[in-house]
Image (tube, rainbow, N blue to C red; front, side):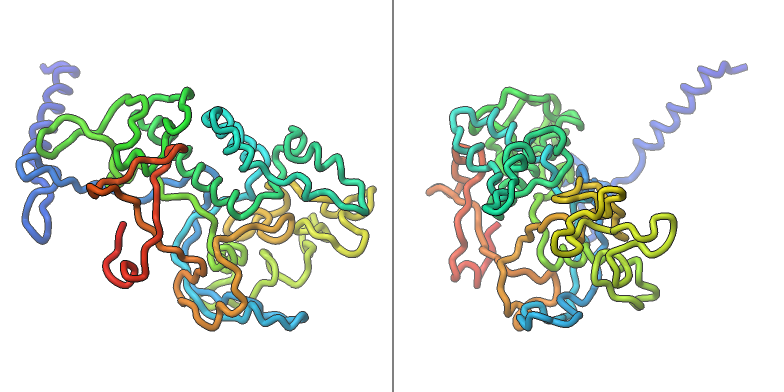
Length: 393
């Protein structure tokens, strides 16, 4: 009679034998084995899908009518309807909150102690609250930094500041992924240009506190750093394009059936009213709006939207994509340059205005130039001749 633990060992041995005899996947064009040291070690990953970053929501792409379809009461004709397509993308579920931006400023101040102007340049303009005919000084002083407002949306941020925040967030998210997956050790002592930057890491200009590395199947064997082809690091964070933002705000998937959209939206919800018209909360505001002159929140007995200024980023009901405050609350930046006549000459897929094509800056020997004082890879604009010919990545 075989004991249970002996039987288990026999079965495991059989599985190991079978797996060792399994054939390796081959290239369909060359016949060479993938993931095989004997064939040079070219790797093919069993990759399924991109991981979802913190606070992001996946938005499936599609076609929609972009632009204004109600009466243009100001006769500006700068949002003429046009049919376009956007591909899949991710977007934040909420607006960036004060606590998120304070984390950003804290990191800048800690890492760039020798360059205090970096954190100073990133600070939002709290004087945006000031009004010569209103007493808003408490908001000037407390709105951004007081913990009572930590979950309210950050305001007074310029387009350039928002773009820099996106770059910083790319690196912090990827650094945490590297730590979570055991490739790097946490390093709170980063300083100056010695900080984790995704691009600098990929081109070999940052090592960090190495904990573990990938197995190298190429010549020489041993270990290697994580590569972009490994699918470990997430793509860059950025501002959404105008087309993406409008598509995400409308969330037409809730109105679609067999590719027919039976009801267009003015807001991020159905109907022509800014109030809920059914259920227990009938009559309540669906977003943070000023209802009329002198009425910013309703009467004190039962405030309507309960937000005389901004509202916390997770207020009211999300739209059909699960996104909050896509109508009302605060204005949000997009990546595009404003151009009234964009609809006259545009691409009907991933429509965007503002491309300035760049390439990585290289030294005289053709290698990637040294990173700058902030630890970032340097770029330079692509010339018209290069843009018309081959692409530089």
